Image 1: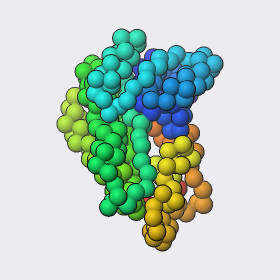
Image 2 (image 1 turned 180 degrees about the vertical axis):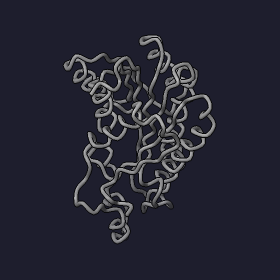
Image 3 (image 1 turned 90 degrees about the horizontal axis):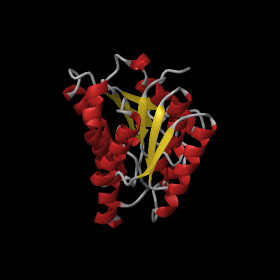
Image 4 (image 1 turned 90 degrees about the vertical axis):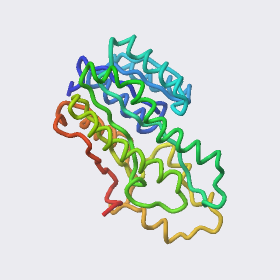
Length: 252
């Protein structure tokens, strides 16, 4: 499929996992992509994969919690491609922590990357999306729709991403800009390694059982990238404010 022929996309968190899979998928379908991450080696590996397949890619190191860095990334992409049609916000961090031992610094970091980082990219790209009548796909999580144990900061940040998506879909509907979000379940990515019960003192393991899917496996980044590609494509032109769960049945 070439659903993104002539389209210009930016993807955050593209150094690994869902971000990498999404960048590779959109580029394979014809998009010119600009990708960012704080993982320099991972970012270059993603770019190398895209270029080897004949795709066009720009890379910028960017901490999405810093608006100045995000703005520079977005401006770089817009200048290189002559505008922006699609923004995909994937960058995220997390982990399990007892709330009584959660530091304010870590709380602020999780909110800063997952929620504020998503807002930063959208805010910086709005003028270009207005011109192109483009769209945004935010990566939230099932942790934004169903409580996870020992993950107050992560749940709060992803719940915020969901409501941010809905609020912006309402605000910019008449402007022709679409906003949607995907909520993955457990996906085999480097981020998954940070969600280990081993980091929680005396955890209640029965609480973790509520998070398991019914199909007995973790998802693959490419499976979420496929959902993102659909939401970002013209095939989903009637969808805005939608929160799409892809979780192996974890929220049944």
